[in-house]
Image (cartoon, rainbow over all chains, first blue to last red; front, side, top):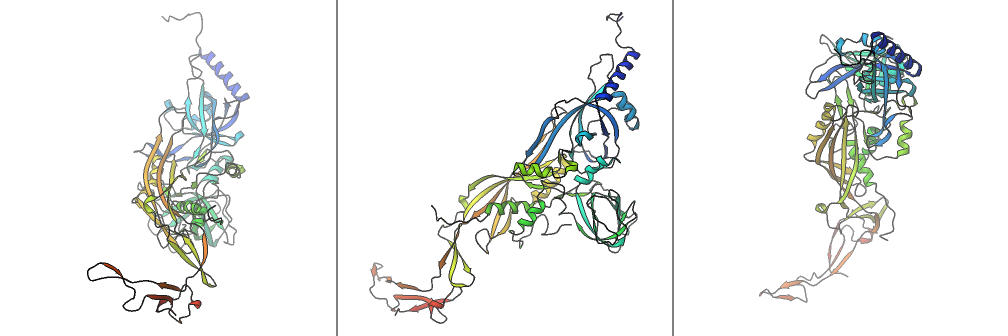
Length: 315
Length: 261
């Protein structure tokens, strides 16, 4: 027999549902719409226990209460030797039941482990911030009615690491097109106009299956139908996926090296030049790679060779 | 004070630019992913400019913490290099265009050791190690690069860059709310030379020398001879070509003309 007082309820199913309903209603009144973006780990590094390559392919809207009322927590904007860092943090409260209904049922994990995961992302449209979940507290409030109705997500602004972000939500997908490493491809003969955001591919070599290089067209491309333009692509991937890592890249069109073909537009142009160097600084205000190249080459006597590559080789 | 002449050879600026050029094209590759170049920056910077520049892309303002991996370097120390000191009376001469009778002179430069620290910040150990391994083999422990115009016009100075120490910090322990910080630190020593101002001077075209020959007697006791056996005690060094030293310039061949007038 339970030693607790039997004349008081300690959480019936109906009470728990009522309690959850009240929480959800409060969250929907006082909360913000945020996007929950699950992480898909493509490759893991079994030695260093890290994700070698991740991508983000879905976004689910859910209401969340921002616990920080005076602004973001964390260190805020600061200047370090690596440039401007924004170390904003925030705590979000979301309902367990709502997460399961809106997001959990689309996840393929073991059902018992279905919960928000550390490493997943939250896009907070109000502040235009992409946050990473660093910790999920699932025991607050602590069994008041013998249940755990909410998750408390501790989030901080995301350290972007060239991951592919293709959720179908423009406001989220722009993080990839704006921040991913870029390569400028100069176009030659061909036809059509590439769409911003579409995938473009180039087949390399005669071997079967042919190695295919894929990338995404960014917003700064200019590819008029006369072929006088260029496309700036990001998130280059290769079908030649070897554990030793492939360094296969786009190549200048010639012989068995094909044209650059748009997956949606059908545009097809020859690639006449590839520049992966001068585009580094485009969207990274702190990067000075091109400045060093420009100024430093005035002073370096390149009768000596550069250990990390020859002068002015930018492909 | 000093010589009162303004000069600024931008030695430190050249050193920073050259150091940056060495590391500005390092790449990483992820399995199944693309090759990426690693952004590099000189760490110290104007705060207000950094803030303004970080805001220039309004669409993505305040949207991420930072893009990684990336590298940054900064000057950490400057000290006199006593091991590379040369005679301070050494001079370098440089011709002046259109002037055959004068030349530019730069006094012996002074050697300094410039401590430069390169930091690699990454989210993944594997990213950082790719960068790290591309750097280490080239420094044995020095890598020498030739810098133009460091010690005056048309000079090329070999500047050794010595990798003096390597360390890393991987702060992964602690609560889940705190961020993992992975930084590799490489300390270099760049042997630069600071040259002074360029001064203009006339070219020496005639040297008249009057001397006594000091010969030894047969018993090895020093005796000053009052007359030279071959009568060459007075020597003029002058232009050989036409024996008209007033037409000489710094390209003229000089010879000896015994017996002054």
